Image 1 (cartoon, rainbow, N blue to C red):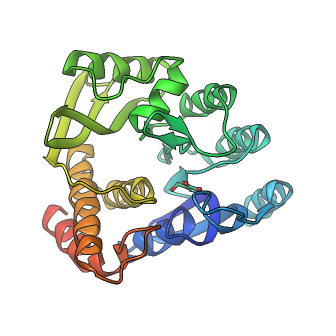
Image 2: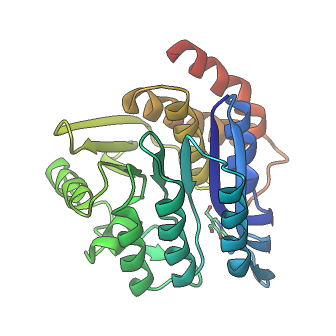
Length: 280
Ligand code: PXL
C-alpha cells in the first residue's frame, strides 16, 4: 500500500485541511499519515476561533519518523501558518524526499484576490520558495499572483496570460504547475496546468456553479494527490479532482440542511471512487 504524509492544520469544525485530506486520501486506498501544524477550533472564516500552534512539535515528529526509517510515496503540504513552518517544511523535504517521492504543495493562502486572515505579501513570497522545491503545485489565481508579486486580475485575462503565469510558476523551480479557478468564458471555470518537462499545457473546464464554499481547494488538492499516488497521469488526476469537487458542491447545494462552512464531500466519495477505478 502506498503511504503519503499530509502536513497542514486541523480545523476541528469546518471541513477543510486535515479533516478533508485524511478521509479523502484514505478512501482512495492510500495510507495517510498526518503532521498537524496547528489545531484551530474552526477554520478562519469563523470569528473568534482558537488557534494552538504546533510548530515546536513538527521537528520532533520528523526526527522520530527518521529514526523509525519511515518513508513516503508523496508529501503533501497545505495550509502553513508561519515563516518558521515554511523553513521546517524545507528541512522535512531534505530528509524525506527520495528519488520517487512526489512533492505536492498547495500554497493555501487566499482566494478572490485576498489573503486569508493572518497572511501577508511577504509570506506569499516565502511560500513561493517552498513551491520551488515541489514537483507539483496547485495554487488558485489569487495565490499565484501573490507568490509572483503580480496584481490580481479579477476575471480580466485571456489564455495567454494564464499560460504566462504558469510558465512563471514553473520558473520558480517546480516541475508542474496547476492553476485552479481559471475562467476564460463567463459560464465556465476550471483548471489549467503546465508541465515544464514536456512543455505541454492542459486544461479542463466545467459549468460555473453560482456558489462558493470553503474547503473546496482542499477537496480538489486531496483528490488530485490521491489520484496521482494511484498512478493516474496529471491529466486524469485533474479531471478526477475537478469532477469530484463539482460533485461535492452539487450535493451540498441539494442538501437543505447544508452547512455554510464546507461541502458535503463525505456523500460524494462513492462517486470519486467510481471515477478513480475507471481511470486506473
Ligand atoms: O481551506 C483552506 C484553509 C485551511 N486551513 C484553515 C483555513 C482555511 C481557509 O480558510 O482557515 C485554518
